[in-house]
Length: 473
Image (cartoon, rainbow, N blue to C red; front, side, top):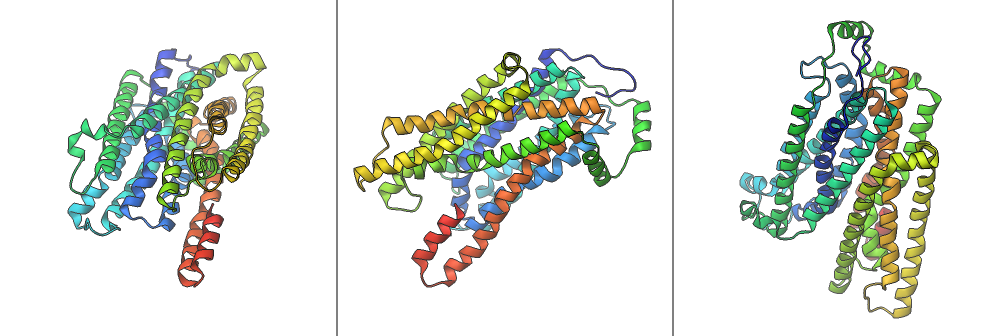
């Protein structure tokens, strides 16, 4: 925390843990998005081409919003501090967005959507608006939270690593709670008002999950911003920053120009990490359903059932992944000391990441060979194949814990050494995370549009459709 020439001392650990707990509320919502929203989108009748457009929101908002929010939070002169106003605003907008998403069907029905029509245009519009607000608000909330943790750690490098480790731990807690809530099919009974004429049991469960998400997020946010105070910028600092303040784009350009070699290496490695991680996040449960279990999304009743069983097994894998993620997050600092530093630890777990992702090909081949040997009547894969797949999910929790914490800790350390603003520096790091995501999703968006038209306009529908489905994957 910059405040004239005064060098603040690191805050006690309870303040760091209290602020880091906000990550549980953030990640609870992300887990619900990953586990429940795709089927929900299909019930609204959203065209497949627009599904890619919806998921494009997260990377784009991360690319634009976090640097802008970070830049302004570094210069915020509110009497409540620099980060807390953005955290409060982000949590409020997340709650509004979650309400719009969960109640899109009801609002659309009251606005004129027919229950008999497969596509509900008003509900789709409300959902898309809510989804974009949600991703923008999440980025508005997460960036200042990490910057606040860096401020509380002052220039203590160990505290910065510990703070980001706690943030990663609470992300795991949010994941576990989100997946658990999403897997419980009778949650709507706790909130009976969620089941309506326009909203069936599945929709009511989704609304109930999002209601709990709002409650958890607002609770941890209110506790954090009321119990953990921050000093506003002094008049002296405000005047100095006003004199040297450049336009936002100029500040971003200047930030890149002033980056030292370690920060450039950090950005490059982070970018390469997320090129590997993003396909896993998109297709993990689908891989279990199609490649490991051999089911099909659009097949006969038995194939669809096998696919569903595989997806549920993938959800179990994500739960195991989250538990390993949480435990590893708390052990990062002692592990780093044993190995010789967090940089060495990051290097080692990247090899674990490579091995786990490569092993998915091996598991797929083994599962295919097993199905060919046992004929066309599909059954669940044997325990060794399923266990191997679940082991991959679990092992990936180790590099994921490092990915969620160490890059952010190193960015905070490098920018504190250079005297740069924490908010803008973390926003720049976030750009290296979302650029690979944009590059992954944008071609899918174009392909969906181009080839969906191709499928409609070409007489050989069967072969072309199969080609298009393979090309999309």
